[in-house]
Image 1 (tube, rainbow, N blue to C red):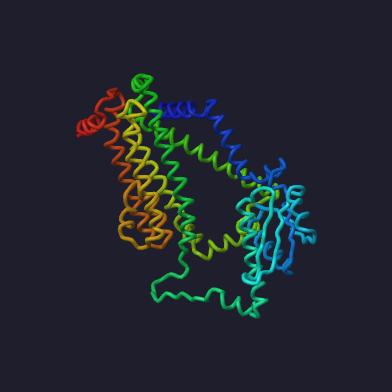
Image 2: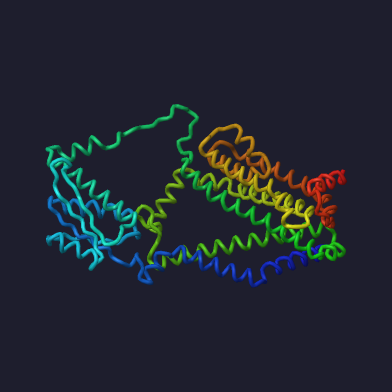
Length: 438
């Protein structure tokens, strides 16, 4: 029995992996992920926009060049690698400067004093400017205008800065049970995205994989030959294990491709910038933020339980997908039956995000105990501090009971449906099979 199951698992994985399509798709995925991680470097290598220096010629009639240069450089530092500018002061006639917009592909900025508006500006370019450059120039010019207006209206700029600066607000919570070290909503939202989106995609791919393989065997009539040599129980387990294994292998490969792209970016000297700061220069600060928020300690105490919740719910999805697939004879029929599974996934996905913004909602807490939904909700509300490890354990017990129920009663439906080739009245066939198990 064990040898037969291993043989079916091996043959199923071999059928999926040892194909030209699998090799071709993974080569394409690897190239795309690595290329996307280093897109700006690739453009630079081939002489793209990232390699070009945009020259900005300033015709200053208001004695504000130093201020413009300072404000513009401060703003460009925030966009990191998405712009390379060189600013210079020009004294030539505007007619000659406009000609340079075509010759040097330069941008000409003219600053002029104005009695009503204090300062007005004109920007000349041969081609329309991109959004980032336009925003940088607009922001710098507005800052220069404010500073120019303060100086020429007799207002001390330092006083104006104090007046317009945001008020210092101290938020205090009077609840004695409030945990000041609890993770912030932003941190938890990031963890939510990291946990939920991969699991959601994993479930969708797994459900599709199980249904496609079972229907392929039924369509080709090879199911009769297989079931005549092995029991439906062995066949059932083999399909679930092989499909789950294939999806897991694909997920690991995608993680490897993304890691290679991420690491290669550091070796090329690029790094990844967030608000002008290289990520590889700020890893320590990120880890410090996660530690101070309590996320590291919380995950350290619960990571095994969270992974167990995810794994058991994945098994429940696989069992249910296998049972539903046995009742269908084509992918079209299976699409009808898998719709409820997809709706459950979508519901869990949105409820998990709602838990971040509606903390303490009893409705969401109750749903975190429901199988299929608990994989996406239970870990999130635990990280939010709304539940305890006991709640995670209860969710695990409920999912285990669900898996046992699906295996015990679902296997009976699987035995009836696996050799049923009728394509009429799909839902009637499902309920009739369930009655036959009583």
